[in-house]
Amino acid sequence: MIKNNIKDLSIQINLNGLSFCILNRTSNTIEYLHSIEFEHRLNPNTVLNQLKEELTSNTVFSEDFDSVLIIHQNELSTLIPKDLYKDNLKADYLKFNSKILKTDFITEDAITINNSVNVYVPYVNINNYIFDTFGAFVYKHASTLLIDNLLQQLIQSEDATIHINVNKSTIEVAVVEKNKLQLVNTFDYHSKEDFMYYVLFVFEQLKLDVETCQVMLSGKIDENDELYSILYNYIRHIKIINLSYNFEIAKHIQNTNLHYHYLILNSF
Image 1: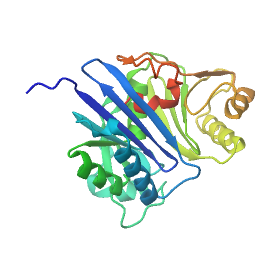
Image 2: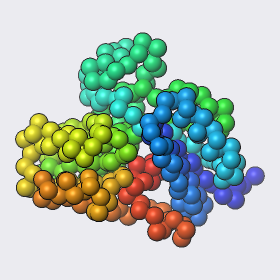
Image 3: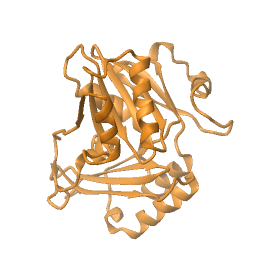
């Protein structure tokens, strides 16, 4: 039996919110794009309850999906060169820059484009529920998607480019220089001053020039908000990313600020 519509579902999991995106591969169109922002940071069990409520109450999720991808977005990850990676040392890699528990399940994503391994802690309760709901699925860490997409879209240049993906209380920062990934990290912030401190910290650690480096922005940031304004006070070249995609965007979604959904739109 030939399916009339082949659809892929991506779900982005963050303790500050959830995002959902459906790509109809038959029409090559993004037909559903929706985010839920929590009032405050939740624990994984409460996030699971929110996810269950959304998936069971919205009829768009009752369809059959050809594939399902879960994106785990948290600070519990670290990048290891593949040549140095040993599977039995996953916890040792992660404990240097993340607070992990002995009971945490640790997994990894292979990133072939730069021959690295991303070690991270997924939300196991979410994975178990998704398997019970949809069957077999794929899951990745958000920074895996960020790295993979940045390096795929890279314009050959010796100059440093900083990409900042902004979330409600965290930022993912990736730096590419001389066509190679130099740094990727996640920082928590609670004010615009925190936000700016971590950005300037990256500049300082990598000895980058605020007068010449290009900063590309995605996620929850606009030209009229305080995060953009404080960046503009310190850094000369900043720009909100505007990408073209290999699929169409449904008319009812076209007025959406697509850079808000950078990661999930680049998950297909």
